[in-house]
Length: 397
Length: 148
Image (tube, rainbow over all chains, first blue to last red; front, side):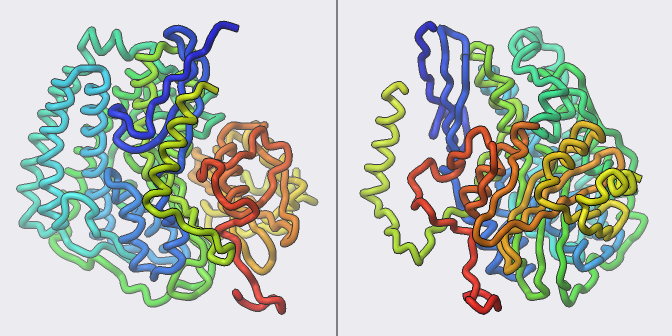
């Protein structure tokens, strides 16, 4: 066997926005194996949820991820409302879908920008992030926050979108639509992007099923799944839209799916705004006094794929168990297929192609069991522990 | 439809079936039947594995394996109850990759053993955690009532 070289990517690496360690085992330029280490980002959210009231859990799960901060409250609301058998009002449904789709818009714009950046095409990066700003401004106008919108609650939403604001929202949407045309042109017709992304990081249909990958990652490999259509919730059954798929399964196909989905998101928001306009005004929540004993399985389609929440209620004011599965949890594992056999330079964009979100993946608790009496590390010990891990890594295994 | 088909092919293995709605069904099954039942769901019927959720209750360690049938939006939960003192069950990871991480996670947090798992090493705590301590286990009073 020829000599393998270990190339570490992470835990803190300019390629990634968040901490995660990938070890690429290479022979020459070619990646022969990939292993990863997680666990740099634990915050104990599932365990914390058991100590908070249902109302407070919304603020907690909203902080699982900074980019798709509404997808977790969405799935949590769906599961709790399933336990309590609550049907929310149409106005609340429209508002929920508007927030969800605006989030998809800004998340996909963020990804397109980052993908351009990874390929060394910084013009795309600057364009995409420039036009993501107006979407964030819209969030500020509607919810008061550019991120972590605090809009959802059991039984509805916290703030109304007044009909007065609708024209201003539509104006921004028209701008984003125009700029999406620009980005689609820049990405889909560019020979350099074609050369860097076509045939790179291919995931077959079978790989997707094996790894249970979801979202644009699955749809780019011809697996036609989307929770919004398959198990409809909020206002998605009330509006017309279509699920975007592609067959090639490579990085280009994933970019194509995300870009074209942006048009669908804009169309969904426009139809929801029309729905609000027709309603004029109405209740945005139904009062839920008690969450009975039972369990609920709620899911929602986040920008990266299906977010799944399983909530067990014992009839008290807090969940007895709250299990969260973010889309990156299944998507990241596909690296094993997409990176092996590629050159190192292609591995980076293959890693980025699933739009990995480590915050979401690693929200689990590793709280110390107090009864074991094990000491928590102090700052000095953490630094020396970190140095020893780095040294261990540098010594080739 | 799918439910009826399952109930006729796995009469003995399915101990209890609850349908909350058309799209939410839970089957409590014999833990020994997990492997054949999951194989049938995944390979024959085209179900997608979503995730598995473990919880520790007075009845023992419970695992809900969540599957989705995307054609109709059905979420099917396979519910198993494992022994309080020696929780173990067959691993599904040799059948499909999707359960690999979650089984390692449940092993690490709850101390549930997954028989024939290809690599049951810790997923989250990079191997420097207290051994034999499971942060998600609960301690119940000896009379079986409530948490200690």
